[in-house]
Length: 163
Image (cartoon, rainbow, N blue to C red; front, side, top):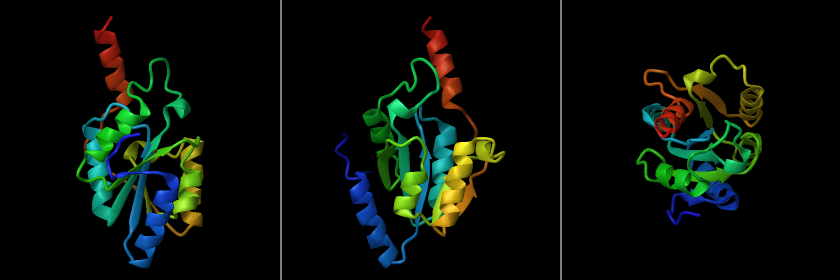
């Protein structure tokens, strides 16, 4: 596990959430794979950070990612380390659940952010996450798609260039 003070365990995140709530400091959560960090990710995280006092990024554990062979490209520690290095990110957490629902229920964020590519709500996992945010009194916020890219596209380009 990376040593950055931004990297939290779930118990530490729950303690932090209680402290923030007592101080009336809002918490926003972004959740995803964040495998090959690109400009679309940075835009999304920057927009999310602008809507909340503190931003926590939940990173899906590698064993839960089903995006095909050789994915994720980077292991859990590498993805946490890169995200923790971003100025707009206050905290990162490895999420070993299939969805963000348990995390949302545990942390009760004020805001839950997804990128504009999730606006169609076709992914049942995202629908469950939005319902969970609503159930804990939080707001679901879509960031815009002014800058869009894809880790899947980037991975494909990188893997193809190695052949």
